[in-house]
Image (cartoon, rainbow, N blue to C red):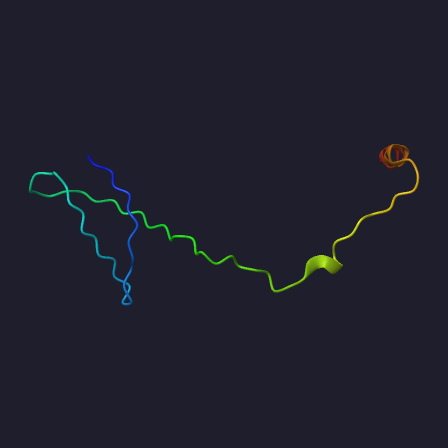
Length: 74
């Protein structure tokens, strides 16, 4: 058994052509093909600006004491 990894292209008609030289004897072989699309070089940028949703909570008081109060309400 031989394992090959190569990068090739699919033509405009959607056909994938493989030309793989082997040292196998003539005869039937089983072939397993796993297609994994190559990641594009372009980085997809979000069209929406989320900066208006980001923020920082200003907490005045003892956060641990408030946590205990809320927990004791259960």
